[in-house]
Length: 303
Image (cartoon, rainbow, N blue to C red; front, top):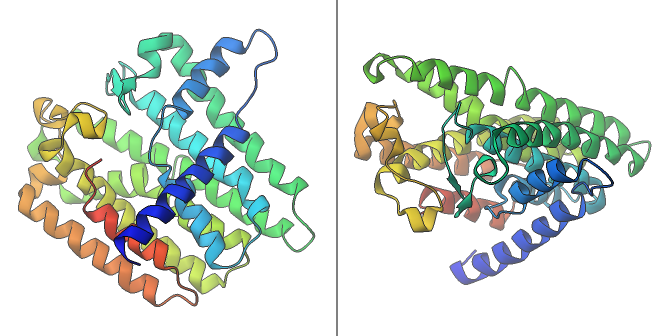
């Protein structure tokens, strides 16, 4: 796919994902107005919508029904946003800028940010469960499978486990953090929810099991490359473009792929992982020029 066609498709698909996420957001009814306002502020603050984009494209690739995917597109962005709200808290990364705007706790206070994140996580599952209302008899077991994937990758043996390992790593001197721990953090804190995005669209569409498994491997490569690129951007990026602070990892002495392997080593690893992901994509029973080009662009992204 040439650059002009890709950028046009990316704009259209991102706009579509924005509309779906907004459509499924909670609407306040009474005294919960403040916490829902905090939650919706965070979701609507912008962002790449990478996870819904990937889920939408794998669903299209296997000719799945668009309306069956909708609750999951919204749910995965809610889970991603809850994790960002909590990541930014003073007890975690203590960030006041996210996507070019004040972070949720900086606007609404720490307590409200905590329960806004809690509420988004819970509402994500409420939303995903509504897919049963849209599924026929053949699709209902696929919804169950998709829910299991979503829940596992968000939990102790996915994103939460990765965040736990990240917190423990911060207590160690950077020189004591080795590749195996850093890889575990990246594969779970970042790649796990990207794995959900790659697999759930395909699962709901009834894709072959071999392809679903292969998509999980592709997601692991993409997720690891994505996080290493984040480490690179923390050194080389522009705060205005990124919409968040840069140089924070170095200032805090945090171990990253860059500190372990240097900028050149990190860039080489991103290229290797991206190449592996592209080769695996080419072996699937169905193809998507847009998805392939998206993976390529993630390697060179600046935000």
